[in-house]
Image (cartoon, rainbow over all chains, first blue to last red):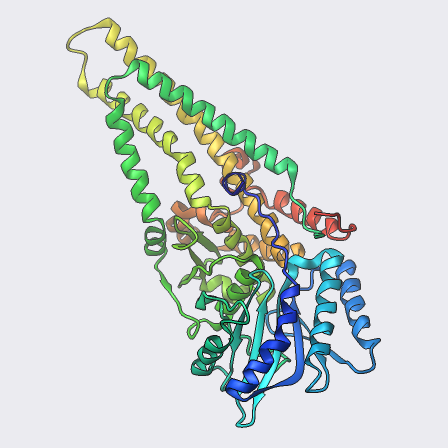
Length: 189
Length: 304
């Protein structure tokens, strides 16, 4: 079918794999034990809002799911590339709750038919010494990668590689390093 | 899983028909060559060599021709950021990114496969479009890579080139070679081969152009699907074509050889009779399709 698709110029929109997110709390325990990184309790979903009122409806539906729960605090923002971020905040130790929130947003958008528009989900971690780490989940690949900003436009590659080594056994870590793209302006960090 | 992004069956059918007709013309052509000509092998080998070089070096040829250079994320953070996100959304490997230093607002994608692919944009394009519109154009170019357009079009053009070569070769050999042996049958045979080759060349030329137009439409559709914003791509198209018509002609002539790869062809405003021969659909046709996708997005999502 791949060959026919190329010949006829067809593209199948890639559907996201949503459930892998639930592996994050276990990975967080490892990060804490091995690298002294704690979850910040903040996570965010990034997607491209399609044009038109149907997309806006799906987005507000996803938002209302989160705001219905008193324990969750939610914020939306647009980044410089025109992507929408829905950020959720929970208590530091309630990572499972945060992941459930993020999953709810993802599945609401996917059920409304915008699964192909989902880009990534980021959960934030921080170290006592000020190190910051985002665990980025790539929907379309079903893989995670670490993103550790150390300045306005610089990354702590050493920390990222440490995280990769630690999490290799627990999460599917993205093996193609060229796909570890920077997300400087994510509200999750 | 549900999706609002649906394929266009009619476009697929038209493309399938074009590919089929092209194949038919080529099979007939090969049959005629084999029955009529002894030296057809040499011609196919020469043309095959030329096309292979074009295929294998398509990225280098196009980049050198446009005077483009590969840029890294430090040099062009915005461009790389847009492409990173599009590739992550489409789940495709990231192509190399190049910038051509010309004010002609355009973009092209080339390279024989997804690993060797290059996306090139001009500085004129980056200056004129905002980030969303740039993303629309880049999504269109990435779709060309995903559809493997360089491979498909090279293959599609291959026997057309052979036919063109045969026609020209025969024509000149009759003009200057003379018919010393005066063998009537050989003469008839050569005229026949020339006639068939000319017909094949014409037919394949028209079909390849049609195929190219369909592939542009397919790339528009796939690009709009990827960003979810057909209207932004439409606005980029209008902006770029509007600007193209106003560019002085000297710039255009140097760029015309690269038309097949371009986001929009480098020609000024021109009469509509040329539509059959053009590599790109008309602006109106492309805008109509994008408007159609835009309304499709509003309908309820079907089960995929």
